[in-house]
Image (tube, rainbow, N blue to C red):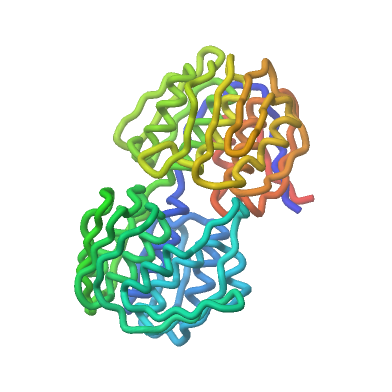
Length: 417
């Protein structure tokens, strides 16, 4: 079993370059199926979720190899249209393959996806979008059987779901006719997928707004694309400096993509300086509580940053209220933060964090991806040593969390027990 040993209690000082975005690269890898050719994906992070996506592509008959931070996918001759339960169960984002496989092969068979247990995350919006495009979908016994010749349509999403927006975009890119997606998600990763689809010859416009128009094309081709920087990883490293004090720089990310996070850190007393490709943070005095933080779809405060920022504010003077409006079970990190000395009260979707003078090192375990990162953020600002286990969750979204924190000046090492 792997663990992180983190000796906290000292200010950080350093610089770290952010990896490619986990939430950006996974749909892009799925979309390589549509090209029918060879695609080069740059800035592809070394994550277990990426490994699973590559395994799915190989299972489908594609050639997928990694060369450093570049992944090469040859999707010229896929041979299968099913994804086995073992692969689907390892990653919730495996649902991204539904649209591309159906559009490319005319059929798709898969089971319901796995992933972090953050409460109900039904894929009904994905299915209704594909049905609008002409797919026939049979649901039964935990499996999906999909078939049909896709054609353009107007899709109105009941909620601005990121995954449903991306699945609809990919399927529509290879469908006949024009598709309009109304109430689309607006996250930066949506624009990144649009960039890749257009790089392989698609005609997709409007990403970043609530209406996306896709003109389907059958002549998609080879392409090369660089994945954007991971805004949630960037938020994690900024929060680590806020937790421990000191100063740090995060590069390789667009500051506009996490402006709601940096606004909270500024309100808490951090000095934040942003430039086109870097964010610098300085912490010169104890943090203070901030106004209520409510998670919301982009451009609101990201649910993926909720636990991370909560960890940074555990020592802030006063009380901060968090309202989690996206997922039901996103406070699983709280018990371990309390074990480290935090004062946090949870009732339903609301958590109240009353700042304490000190946190203390403890043995803690990640229960999910972002909750695990939050425990690391708390540990660098705690007195004494923390031992963080459950790294299989963290490895899904952070290419080298220990290395990144060490680059910022933290005393952290990864050990195999």
